[in-house]
Amino acid sequence: MFWKRFAAILAVWLCLSLPAWADDYQFQSKHDSDGIGKFYMGREIAQVMGHQGAGWLERSSRSSEEQPGKAIAALQLKSDSVVADIGAGTGYFSFRIASQVAKVYAVDVQPEMIEILNDLKAEKKISNVEPILGSETNPNLPENSVDLALMVDAYHEFEYPKEMMAGIVRSLKPHGRVVLLEYRGENPFVFIKPLHKMTQKQVRQEMTVAGLNYVETRNSLPQQHILIFEKAG
Image (cartoon, rainbow, N blue to C red; front, top):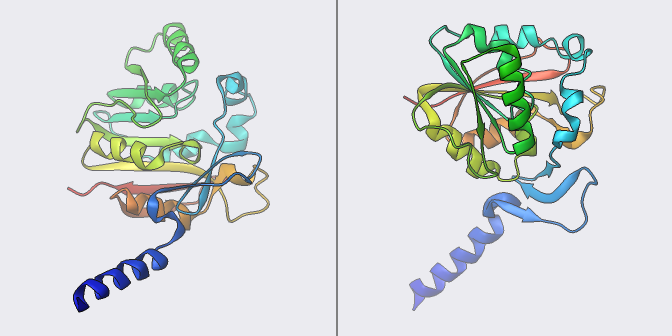
């Protein structure tokens, strides 16, 4: 009888001691207007930018504002690498890195973005970019096939981050890397809506839960962190 009571008390204590995100997802009816009312590890998930914003992704000022060339240099790509651009959108990064690697999987959950990707692929005559329609819970990538998974201002919009990261990790080869570009949530002078920014601390917590090892953070970009993680061998 004593042990049964002890076990019951311990179970209650553990439930009270666990952080709010221990059950993976929490929901709140009152939430930020830019969020979906769903929280993961204490962070509200941001609304997805729809395909209607494709023009913003391809804006002429993006090069000077974000300096994608520096970001791509930081990836240390190899000619035989297979890269997955998760949340690829219009393929702004996919097509820029295609000439430096063997293959790029351009993954997006919106069929309209996949259509844009296919149109641009034909227009640019780039054969090694393969658009893939993912789901909200799965990037639909081949297992053990990817050297680098890249997410540019995308991860904070994943409706099911735990499930998506599990799929991404499955797709990685041993020692495969995950690189996130996220606007600096610590900096109030980065004038991006708060839910569309992330702090280093938050990203590291969520990637650790996904089973990835932290490698480094690079702050060579004007507004974004470059956060690098690795899958164990």
